[in-house]
Amino acid sequence: MEYVTAVPHPPAQAPRPSRAGRRSLALALLSGALGAAVALLSSRQQWSSGTATVAGGDFPLTAQGSDVTGLPAALAVVGLAALVAVFAVRRAGRLAVAGLLALCGAGTVTAALLGASDSSALDEKAAAVAGDTSATVHALSHTAWPYVAAAAGALILLAGLLALRYGRLWPAMSGRYERVGAARPRRTAAPAADPDRPEDLWKALDRGEDPTGA
Image 1 (cartoon, one colour):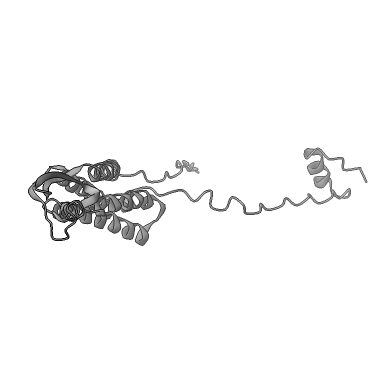
Image 2 (cartoon, one colour):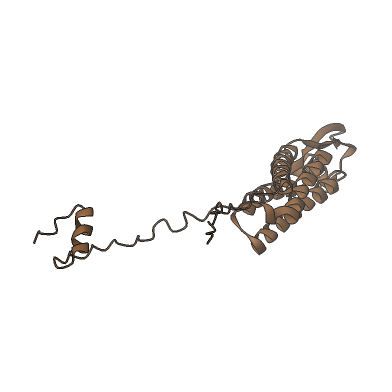
């Protein structure tokens, strides 16, 4: 009679992230962080310049990105926070945060492109300098920084789209520390050895106890 010996199978391992998941994660982190940093930097640069007529002379004026619109910088901060929050939530929450990240990128692009030809910030400065609310700026010129901010917004948008498409493959924060303060189960004391049962005496000796003690 033959006996078949069962071969133990190795324990199943947790599925590893796919190559697409790893690549999309790295690309999203890089593009999102870079886009937010560049958007913040661009908002502090000069976007436009011109001159205002004051007492018969020309007075030069300049406007930074934050003077023209504060949306790119604000949306960059929100987008960066959303990029971090993607890893703190799962399933529907992750989709919602990824959508917010994409909207921040799209909003940054739109605000930057609208500000590329905006002259209201310089007109306000011209009115303040000339003391005339109807004063406007002339010889208006713009720099390339609004388009740099728009490109930064496109990077944030790319991070959001990647999170929407591949976010389900990305890891999430571990919940192993969620119940750190939970009370641990108390160990119950071993029952006293019965002198009439030899197996209890041997178990007590194995535990290092004196089975004959009171």
